[in-house]
Image (cartoon, rainbow, N blue to C red; front, top):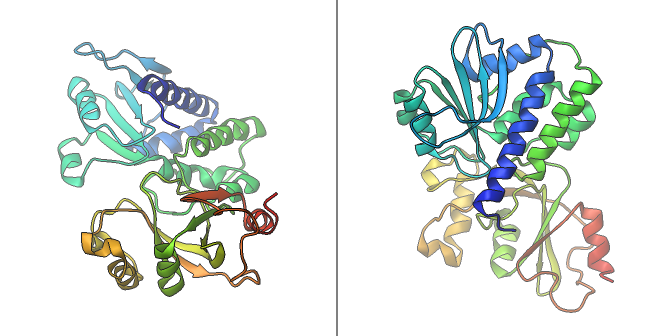
Length: 318
């Protein structure tokens, strides 16, 4: 579904409101841990939290979330459903040089050189936010929101005690909202089903697959059906997203990824930065069986909640 700018802004502000609820309800020591992780402050207790605040006299920018503090003036949060807006965040820094600027987006666009010139700016991804909060949510929700990648630069030093149920409810609802907005990827049991000769060769020969930039990345299994025959079932063991050249990969599987790509029709055109997954084949008794429905199981790709749901549909599409 395509969203216009007003709809995106509404959804970003809803995230800001939900995050404000999280900050407002956290016990003081948990709150201190969160803010300290964001800004490295020794005295992070806030005086006031406001959403969608016009704090810039020089232009019409409206901050998503502003926290006012006694030891420094304020923290300004900027939230993005997609890529970071570097120019906007720089404007915040220029117009509010005494403030801390926290930019959280699906994909950070600042590079390390730029950030050295803007020390008051900190950038994070929504995936890092999830990973930072993961240790304090319930075991059931930890399993549901198990991340595909554990790396994070947002790592609050939370106290070693359990949050109360009302606080957990607010925090977990916020994290579920991030998942519903497709801002984070989690393991779970979701299945991506694809078709085609290229998919068959790259998976069956190399256990590697690359896919569309705008496809949902939140899946744990890949199934390939070619000419109605089930040819491959694999579990994702590594994900490599948003890299523009092979030189940027930090992977033990880089050589096999190169080999798989160079053997494909796309290989002669160069690497275009599609998300890449490395797989481990899952043995299954239905391999080489045929889709029972009329026509192709999919023209491009489709998703199932788990392997059981897929195999049931594969054998009994009606």
